[in-house]
Image 1 (cartoon, helix red, strand yellow):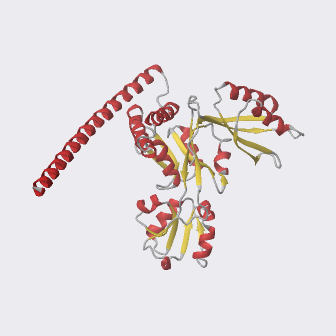
Image 2 (spheres, helix red, strand yellow):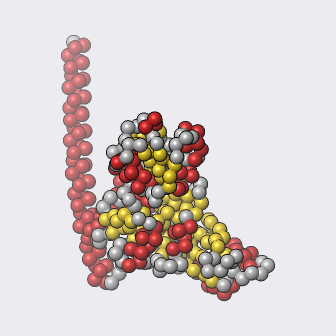
Length: 370
């Protein structure tokens, strides 16, 4: 009798397992049909927008859509996975409206490439370029719709080349994305004793300086244009090691000598999405600008008061040398809010009256900082 009872219990469990798997298969078919329907509808939306002369791509709406889904989820489905799934759905369906071509600081597998994929998904057409200025050039010329450029690192500070480029190119900031930076030491064999030279981008070398001094004190280091370029070099030269991303290891078929060799944990780089038109307000935006002030007591205080009396939070402010005038300075500033919202709009109008120069760089959905 106990044996028969055990057999019945096992049979019941197998039947339950079959039923649940059939239910999963049915749900998968429903999901597939919903995805196909969503893709078709997004294509129709794009067609109507083009006929009305409207901008097809709406980065602000995409940001709001994702935030709404996370609220409605109420934590039931793992949030990070939900974001990743719907970002890819949104980005893939975007191609039904318009093929989005995106320039980034290449070659393939740089952190800029990772930022581009994180923001636009795998469905975009990515164009690797040799320098930040090339990204600005291609985007301004319209050969790519958007560009992805680094603007700030949590350890090394502001990327001067990116900020300086806005004085020469008529582009706006359309979005931002944060990418955690993790550096691996890579070569062909995975053995430290084979390394005769270490290559990487100057920022990566600076972020791993202490580790290199302790573990490879007699090995020379050399700066190159990108971490991915260093990985490409290591892929053809067995004496070279590269400091690069885990993505570079997979892309260029390299072995990991040591992982996470950065001197400080929590290293994050902020990237800007640049283009020709800033998104509409989403309710969770940032505005970036340059301004210069006259050389008189209280001038900076007067500027900052414009923000304080309107309860506008400043998230960043720093001074930068003015290239055209020695010992004169520009201020770079980020604040919360959108230039089309009344408090920020009023503040910008007042700044134009009291500043020598004001240059609005863009208003865009605020990225989620780790």
